[in-house]
Length: 224
View 1 (tube, rainbow, N blue to C red):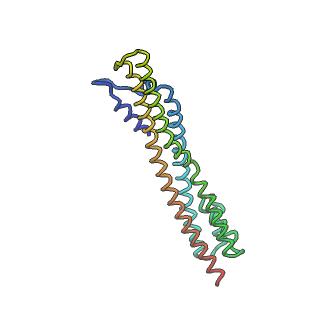
View 2: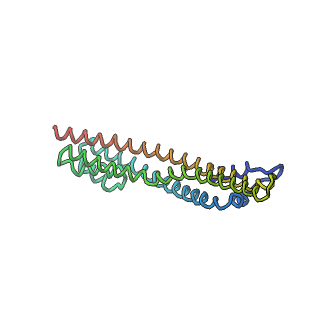
View 3: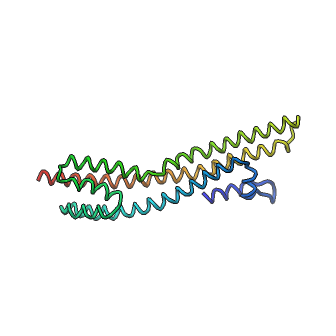
């Protein structure tokens, strides 16, 4: 995201040997740069948080799924429950919900796993709605800045009573800068949003596969 901002700075050339730096871009964009800046700051914070959060949860999931699957395959359900309860991982919470009810029958254990799974998926997806919102709102804020800039340009023409490049240049510059800024913010945010969705999908698939193995083991135990 920072690289894309620098790219925007480098591409806004005024002429040979001239360019707009970030401060000049901010000033030239007008007051609409403040909500765009807020969208950028919020997006960066959420992205950093989700990167750390999913990395930690993904690591815990791999550990608990490996250990729990070994215990379940060996028929050590009590030991598997202990491993899952102590893990604090999303997968551990899902499996422990089923393991804690295996004495009540396969149906009750299956329902418990499904309920716990829905809760854990909601937790994994926390924050994604904000990224989706920001990726949609940032371009709209940029386009709003475009409209405001064009209004400024036509207002300058109306006041002067004639069309001159210097009169409309300021308004057009606001229009172009806010549009470019909105797109520059939205594109990386949307990329990270899709990356997080894909990573969460992989975590969910791993949990579903392990939960299915647990249900199969409980069913086999009940039948046997």
